[in-house]
Image (tube, rainbow, N blue to C red; front, side):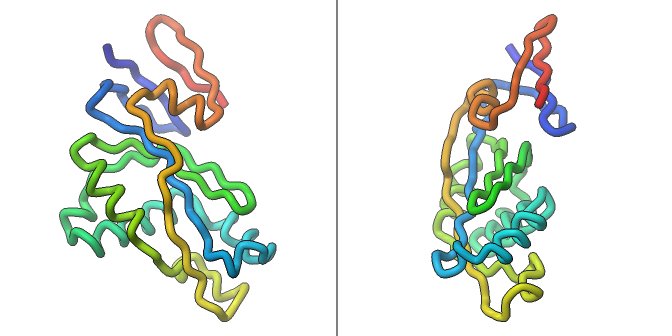
Amino acid sequence: MSAFVSLDGFEIEDEGLEWWYLTIQLIISPKHRNNEVLQKKILETMDYISWRTLISKILKKFFGIMGESTPIDYLKVINSPNSYLLFIRIHKDDKLLFLNSIMSSTFELDFLGLNEVTDEKIYASMKMVNETNNLEELTKLANINITNQKQNLIINE
């Protein structure tokens, strides 16, 4: 049984086991984790477009145009100081390619405009925090309330 779900304005269909829902965390280099000004700038700039740019660059680097064209649904961004999380949906066939790419990459955050804050190069990496093939479980991880009305899932924050 599939259900239509709205996450941050995007309507997606939960089709069960064909899709995996992942929580990805951005890890800033230890040298810069305690820099409050830098953390504030990253907090302001790490939005959907920044995450998409970053992931596209990484997938292109490892797998070329085929990696860059991997279909990924960017569902929710949750940022707080020293914790930058992204919730995505990815097809089961692309999951391994995606995880291999992001977990083996260290990259520069130059595209965020951090040169306004520091002259040093800021490096980061990513790790997978959670994975599930169940949309309801993902919403619990993302602290989203779900109400079931007439077999349609409606998500309220």
